[in-house]
Image (cartoon, rainbow, N blue to C red):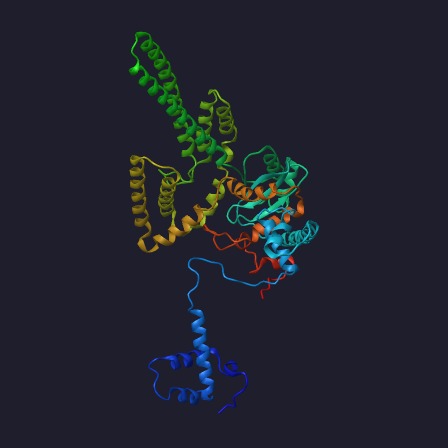
Length: 503
């Protein structure tokens, strides 16, 4: 028998995996006579050691089974406040938009530690320098389309380039201006070889031309958003005019004298004419909006092929020429966009056709056309609320395309081919709205600062790239991970900060 020590139940030669069964058996109400002696003999310890184990197990169970507070409540945790934790807290507060002047107040309230604004600024400057080094060291191969936009903070522009698939920030710079030469230099810095999307701004367009970007995709969102916004405004105006007619008609029925009847009748006729004009204008413009929106789909549903760029652009130009005679600044703007920039809206088509070639080679052209038609039917169903006849028509097309795909591929390989087609078609092929998505995240942070410089932008770029997405198809991954970069579990260690230490 092993000699007993003063360590009691903390003997290292009896691991917890062996102690737990001993305690459970000893605490059992059906414990047989002589169990303690048998356990002591089996494990080569004294009976007193077994009793000590049982007492410790009973105390642990009792402490864990004490009823706690009802409802969610934070668990108590003791932390050690040191320089590293203060710096990490300053970085987190900066990431969520707290200014340097307010960070000391937050740290004092949360950690009972007073620091000066100058201390915070000095520490953040060190972190910004480290972030700049990491950003320079990270040069992932660009395997996705890019989007560019301008973020204005404190009246000054910041040039932003992000990946359409990963939302990785490839560039975030503070230039002296946002002209064509500046944008050209940004794009030539390792970014000009990828397809690039923008909102067709003057500086961006000039920069794309100087950098000789082969595929410059203009933004559909900058076209469709004002188009459908104007449809909504015209609809509201038409309903308002019709409501005015109904109100005047009610006043006519309540009138008693011939003079009042004549007055309300004349007013009703005038309102009726104005309402008819507004209803007609709404109907006409909505039909044009439907024609514009019909060209947005990647696939031509009747044939299953990609759209023909020349034909699709000409359809938009025809709509633009119809709007040219309409009075109003919005119609002049839309007409100019459609007539002059229609071709740029379809520059993604050669790149998409190239991406679909391996799928066509693997499954054949008939199968690819059927699956593309199937995908476009589902995409059109999701994009806008449809009338009942439209939904029925889409359902009939969907069923016919599904039958065609099954006839060509068979049920065994259909799911695999469908997965490959959707993987290609569901990529972001059009528009700069993804750059504006990142813009919407960064602009409030930049607006909250009285001064921004390149160091500040480098820190924001790093923090955005290492922050994991919380939801959506990218959930659980950061932009840096999505472009193939290795990010440690604690990305702040890349900024020369130590991991957090708790007591």
